[in-house]
Length: 112
Ligand code: HEC
Image 1: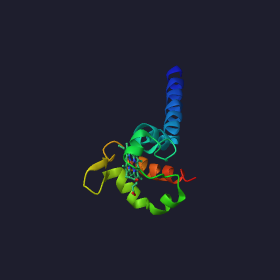
Image 2: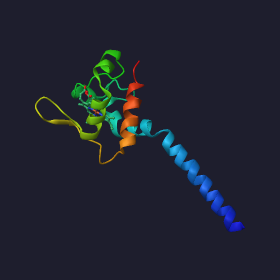
Image 3: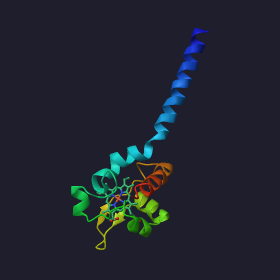
Image 4: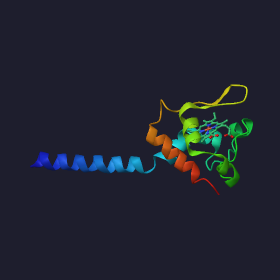
């Protein structure tokens, strides 16, 4: 009986843990992987963001230029500038498909 209670508790804490870790992944991934270039609120108001002249993703006009499938492709495969130089790496080896599409949703919500 004692073991049974332990197992039940372990199961509950596992499920709660899984629910919590799924609740905030996009914000967490953004902070860990994207913020240094794109800024906390997508304005690219960081040193690297300014240097790379990254667009302000909180700007409705910029959001209008972005297409969900192209955003997803950029996150997965990275972005090259006109000279063919990689300015953003691809994240498909680090992030799951779900995490990447959650990031697209996250970016859409940055619109001011
Ligand atoms: C080393 C800096 C850097 C990092 C880190 C970075 N990006 Fe970018 N990203 C860029 C640059 C540069 C561009 C192209 C310029 C622009 O969009 O204004 C870009 C473009 C994009 C675009 C627009 C693609 C399109 O459709 O035009 C999206 C979406 C994007 N990044 C998402 C992300 C996400 C999500 C992360 C984190 C997982 C991330 N970026 C991390 C530099 C970075």
